[in-house]
Length: 327
Image (tube, rainbow, N blue to C red; front, side, top):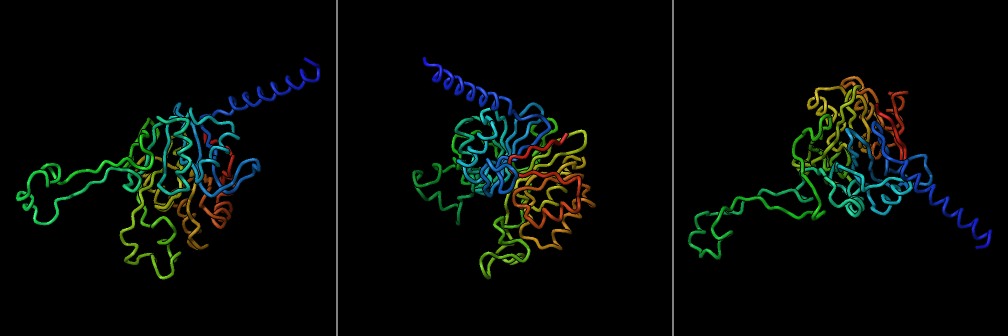
C-alpha cells in the first residue's frame, strides 16, 4: 500500500474511532435532563422542529419522556447527540398529540420491548368499557343464540384495542402512582380541548369552541407528567401542560407531599395573554413555591420573557440539545 493511501486509511479509521468513542461517552448521566426535540436552541447542528422530547436517568433507569413530531428528525437529533435509544428502559408519553408521540416509531424500531407508560386515552388504544345491551334488554331471548352477542353472554364488556403502536409493551395509566421508588407518574385531565380551541378567549374556528360554551363542556384530555424525588425536592417534567401547568404542580404537591424544586418542559402558555401569564407565573413561584423553572416547547416567547424576569438565576435554559443538571 502506498504511503498516501495508508495515511488516508489511518485517517478514516481514526475518525470512525473518534465517532464511536464520542457515542460511547455520550451516555445519559444521572441527575441530568437533555432536550432532544424542540423549536429553539443554541446548537445549529440539530434540527429544530415544533414538538418535544427529553431524556433523563434516574435510579439506574434511562427514561425517555415524549418523542417529538417527526420520527426522522427525532432520529437525526438523537444520532447527532450520540445517544443510543436501545438503552432506554422506560418511555413516558405525556399525551396523544402528534408533536409528542411520532418519534415512538423510531424508538420501537431499535427498542421494540421497551416499557411505555401512556395516558388512559381510548383514542390511542386504552381498553374501552362498553355496553351493547341496547333497548328492551329481554328481546335478545327471542333470538336464536347465533344472533345474540357473545352467544347470549354478558353485553357489558371492555373492548381491548390494538392501538396505534400494536404489539408494543404499553401500559395505560389512569391515576397517579409511583412506578419505582421516588419515580411518580402524575396523571391529570385537561378541561381544555388541547388544540387551543377551548383556551380562554381563543377559537381557531370562528364562532366555535369558545371556553365555557356547550361545545367545550365535556372536553377531556388525559395527560401524564413525571415527578422524580431528589434531596432538594421533586423534579417535575411536563409535556404540554394542557391540564394547566399550575394545576399539574398542585396535583404533584398533593401526590408526593413534597416541594417542587424544578419544573421542566412545556408550560403551554401560548394561548394566554400577558396578565394571565404573569398570574400563572406568580402562582407557581409564590403560591406553589416552585424553586426553579426550565421552560421549553409550547411555553411561548411571552412566557419565556416573563418567567426569565421573575425567576432570574433560577431560570434554566432548556433549548434543543441542552443538558441541565438538577441534582
